[in-house]
Image (cartoon, rainbow, N blue to C red; front, side, top):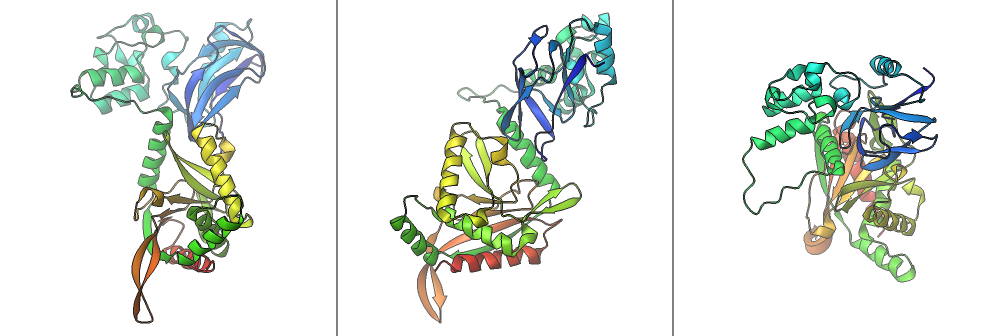
Length: 397
């Protein structure tokens, strides 16, 4: 079937497990040329474009906009105009993607033949023939009787949206004056990743306080003599990068049953936007000056605000730094961003009393909490990293 081309979810990046269709740029029956942008798909907070590898006609769309599918799942079919429908049906039935197809309701919205009873069924019809396993599972989870649901998919198929709508109809209405805001695709991606990380990764936390007076004096000197304004966070990222070189057992990714230990300190910096946090990657940060780190971070922040970040900007991070000090937060614990093995949460620097040589004095203190994946980073390793990080910070005095 060389005249038939599958549109399947590609694996854009090592961490990708599924993608959500944002928009189809073609409709069934449209002529397709090689290189045409067929659809836009969001995964890991980045929108990617799927380009056709062949000429033909878009013959089938199996998954609607807003629906998510795992890597390898079939989304649609491109075929030559002279390929008959039976051949396309056979291709779809025999298709085997690179990811498990279990619980996949991709057949929900296709043009394949559907039994007449199912095609014309409304509430009270045969729900089993009008819905895929994933739809039936969702209905059971939400307590929805599928026999009472009218399908809005092609040929009367029941979709997940139909089930959710039925569940909403039976729920208590929102109080007057309450705005109901659906989660964006980006927020849904964040929710899935963080929920999975919190459930699947055995987190533990180590907290220390660092004195910042020497670092602050160093920052003042840099800003007095340079054109690029350096923040406290920029200096801390530089110190983290150096510490990762000294304790590389924290500079890792966890991929399936293996540890990927990085030689470079690819520090991910969490940048907040209206759509959520974006962990942009400052590659080989140990080789950059603090001014170069500041410039890179500023550029990333601007691109994040404009929605112009690329997959490369968010990939290959080996360790994450999240700083909420600028929001007045004293300390917090952060959720690990998989596949990385650790994340450092930084609070605000504040003047506090400290004792030196038996005398009380005042110093600027910052609280730092390291979240570690206990499967791969033992407590002693995490503690060693925090120790060498403190030495790097002190070295700026």
